[in-house]
Length: 180
Image (cartoon, rainbow, N blue to C red; front, side, top):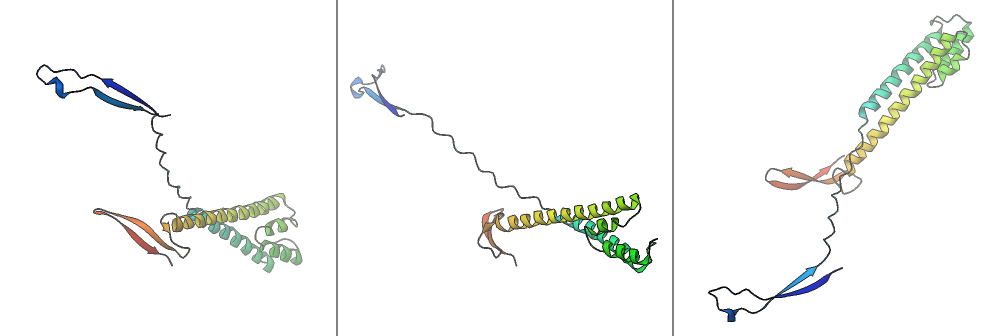
C-alpha cells in the first residue's frame, strides 16, 4: 500500500539572510513498503557423475569371470578339466559353464559337492553383479556425455554444434564448437 504525506515547514531565518527570499518549504514524503527482495541467483545444474571408471571396471571384471568360467567349461567339455563323472555328464556340465549368468547355476544342478555348488552359484552371482555394475556405469557415462554435449554449452542442435562462452584476459567471446 502506497500513501502520500505532505509536510509543510517554515524555514529558519539565518541572521544575515534576506527572509523575503525564502518562503515556506513543502516536502512530499511517499511511504511505501520495502521493495521485494531480489530472487536468489539460480545455481547451475551440477554435472552428473561420469561413470567411466564404473563402466570399465564392471565390464572388465565380468569379462574376466566369464572367460575363466567358459575356459573351465571348455576344458571340462573336452575331458581335460578333472571331471570325475561320465563323459556325457562332463560334456553337459562343460556346455552349461559356457553360458553366461545362469550357466554356472545350471551346472550346479549336476554337482554332488556342496562346495562346488556354492562356488558355481558364487561365480554366477559375480557375473550378474559385475555386468550390472558395467551397465550402471555405461548409463552414467551416457548421461554425462549428453549433459556435456547439451548443457555445458548453449545447445544449437542435436548434431553436436554448440556455442560456448570463452573467457579471455582482455574480455570474453563466444566459441563455436562442433563434435563429430
